[in-house]
Amino acid sequence: MLIDRYHERINQQIRKVEQTQKEACMQAGEAIANCVQKGGAVHVFDTGHIIDSELIYRGGGLLLLKQFKYNLVVDNPVRVRDRSAIPQDMTGLAAYAIRKSGALPGDVMILGSVSGKNENVVDLAIEAKKFGMTVVAVTSVEYSSAVESKHSSGKRLFECADIVLDNCTPAAEAMMEIEGLNVRFAAASGLSAAVLMWSVCAHAVDKLLEMGIVPSILKSENFEDGVEFNMHMKEIYAQTGH
Image (cartoon, rainbow, N blue to C red; front, side):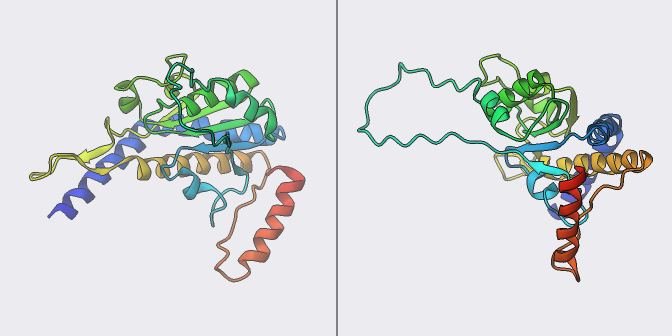
């Protein structure tokens, strides 16, 4: 049955992540702990594959992980004309976003992109490093190596980061070849990224406790006293950064 084949394949995927990425996860966890100990902050920018939803403001998760988002909206409803000769390069916009954010040098920026090719995520990685932040990439090195960057530097995300967490997914993401289908089935990156980032958080908690720092961990707000508990955690975070 396909469901059994899927279970076998995804378990293989997670074992590969566990076996090959532990050291990188520990490096990322230690970077977070060191950053927080020094009064820094941790920012998470995700292009849509689970990391935000899995980590940010989640019961059992670290309150200190904060979403980083930016966008440029241009409202100019003139008639349609040929603008093909006008450059559309947005390189450098991320530098402005960082300056307008709450980031400071010494912070950690976690960037999630499976292909790691798109202009916005590469630009943010480059500018975050210039700003003095530690850049952690959650990406597929195999996938990214098979595609061309859309950034003017020609670099992909894994080539711009201080620490690379490889989700070990194949190029184009899908894991399984199924007879009767003309395309591979079952994306791997979401579960892999979740395992990677919870591993990072586990090591960060370990290191923070070793430092004598008790990080704010959220409760589910659907559980008894969850809302009140989390309000208290928010107050602690506002005062301490952890």
